[in-house]
Image (cartoon, rainbow, N blue to C red; front, side, top):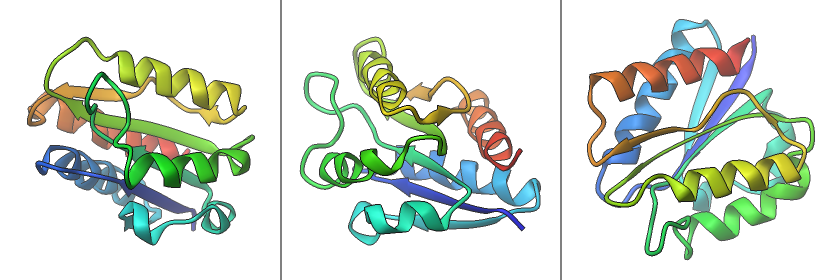
Length: 141
């Protein structure tokens, strides 16, 4: 059985709702899933999973949350080469620049980005939840 990690940071609960939807998609695809907060995940855990979904909302001037999530993610980047990953997160304003930058960073790391990042404005609607579940299922393939 494939093992999938979902590592996310959520300030308002929007990205947490997205993480839970990704987890439902993984479970529906018959894989094992574990959800982590940034403090619970480390670069050493990357190789323990077949695929990883990272979730973080847009903060400040369209950037990753910089006190918990970003340091953890930067630490994991050297381990992402060839690793199947997916990205997701919510935003309150802007046009998704943080996600485009994040995707570009993952491509530079030579990660296997399995799909475009899933983003939603504020709380995830039904379409965003469905996209998150599809992302979870795609991680298992």
